[in-house]
Length: 180
Image 1 (tube, rainbow, N blue to C red):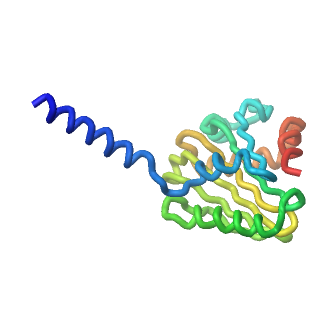
Image 2: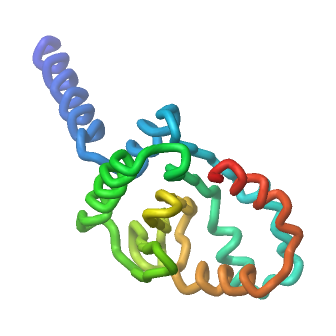
Image 3: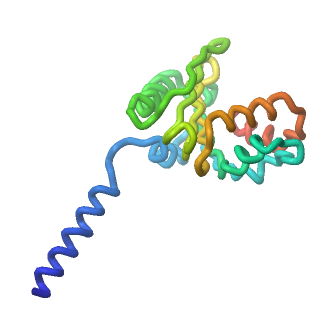
């Protein structure tokens, strides 16, 4: 009887290990695999480091800001790398977004580049929002906005208020120097 219990427990542990350790590609794995690769830059930024002044936020903006935990940035600037690697990496990232897990909010073209905004989860309980931009002149960049129960509408309201304000963005500029 004891041997039967040991076998069942061992099988249960093995089954849980197989299910939880998926070999499926993911954006998180992509970040981990590329953080030490040549010509890639990966940075984790806790929201407190961004130096954003919350004092002027309304309740919706404050709720949105509080739902964000951190931002992860990955960049592959063309000037530091090569065009062939850029094309391969761009296609790999685009493939990650083609799964049913990600919901696309927007696709847009900008002067010489494209931007795709997606999220994981329900639109009122987002755990990860992703902004992926790429262009032949600049390279590619991915921003993962990680949080708890973020709302797409609230995040966009927060974005608009930050975009229309003129905060002291010297800390933010320091991070973006890494991508140049």
